[in-house]
Length: 442
Ligand code: ZN
Image 1 (cartoon, rainbow, N blue to C red):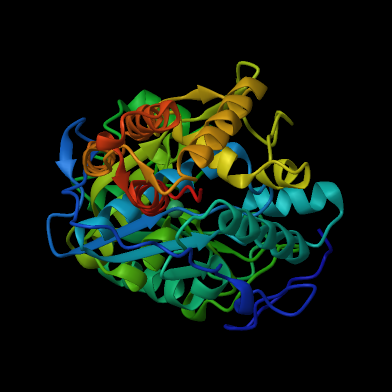
Image 2: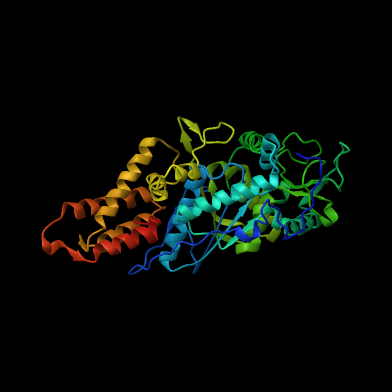
């Protein structure tokens, strides 16, 4: 890092080519109208293991944790956002009014460490990676969030939330005794103020402590009341970016409080579904849900849904291992983004799976086959297939089952049959159903 403390005012998002404000969303795909309606969509709540109605009311609200923009968009990211895109599409087909919020963690330790390691300004890295992510989401046909906020933009609201938690006694200050601190110290949440803590991931204390240490927590920090207490506000350090924190002093927000505040302000508490990769279950979702409860003295997310990890050659895909398959690289090689989407959809969202060339080749072959099956004016009856795809999506977003149903229809369409079995206009209905419900443009 350069040894300059940067202070960025609200709304003044940094970026090499202007600001990110103008581009912090992407174009919405067109979703064709279908006859009738589907649902109700059920999902597996990872807190309880139960299959539950994803949105019991007329409105459906979801918060999906966004990227930290330093390794966008690898296949694990893409699989997560495509999974929650199926949820959004299922809800829209149900006739729900959907509110979807997400964030970009555009100031965080991994981003700053990456910037320092590569000698790139953290703001440039965040801007470039976010731009790439937006292009990838557009190409994959993902419905954009209604509320999309960067951590940097949320700083003033996070400051107010942390001040409120301090005033309520659910947070406390740990002095920066190492003489580097310029503010009042680092602020931590007091987990003992939240009797419901632990209900998201339902882990034993030893496992919580181990994961907390592995995934960005600081269990060994002296002065904390409980080793698991998470950071809410990090006082400014030399060489690190910082923002005005009012009474907190200059600093930057912790990761978990950022999501809690953006969700609260974007879609309100409680909300229906909190989503993200299974590696976010603990500590991130446990902590952000706890913060949300303390902020509103109520509930955070009603249901937690987690996506599996995508591996490569037997290992989890990650920047540190250097084994990332990037959507942008595939696109640059001329791979059809719809084939990438079909490759993802061929695996149930909750399962861990491996990316291979064969997976991509099979998806491309399936895409070609479907496209030729919908190219005629008539084909096998569409109503049964539409019902099958709807039922599969509503049953815990079972995309592989939906794909097999479309395969069967395509096989019948390509095989041809007696004229009596041909429904005029069926290929159009099927193409619209595949587009609206699965997000695959044929
Ligand atoms: Zn989050």
